[in-house]
Image (cartoon, rainbow, N blue to C red; front, side):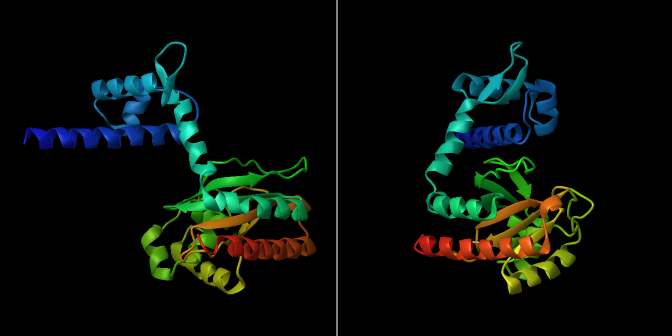
Length: 256
């Protein structure tokens, strides 16, 4: 029994470690011990000891006072290793380069993770007016073109299992009703691409396509354009470029 208890304690410690790292990863900057404790709910003494261990190992860092905590450099190394070792990211490089050249807009590759999408690769637009994007950024699937393209590869019941009935609204344009979103996903399936009309970021329209090397798809590529320079003709050219990029990436990923 003592061995089982010890094993259970080790598992709990591992879970708490991961939860702490995810807490810091989602909240840039440093945070007071009391703030972290309120958010995660661990006993203060246990939390302090765990944080000190993570600091010693480089997974968490402290400020000059030693009283505030944030994500450490070790987390960056692991995240970079994930991206560097991913076959789809490697296969997408030339496709994203070409898509960025053709559209002169910001393009990216993202992966579905629960109810969010996580950016795995990006190419920035050369224009002065361009969206902010970075590898590792997490965004809601229901309010992004990337996410909607991926959700559309699931059937209606799978989408209902994945998403709550009422969805959060990053902007006033976001669809917050799950059934209304499901209706939109049916249209996405028919035409082959999705559109985010300022639903995640005001002033920005995004277009997305899922990469069909597996079903349901887990990866998608997108093109983001400030609405200030988007015309109907440019919109159609971006849609065509995205569909072509999808087909080219599908060819190189078909054996993955």
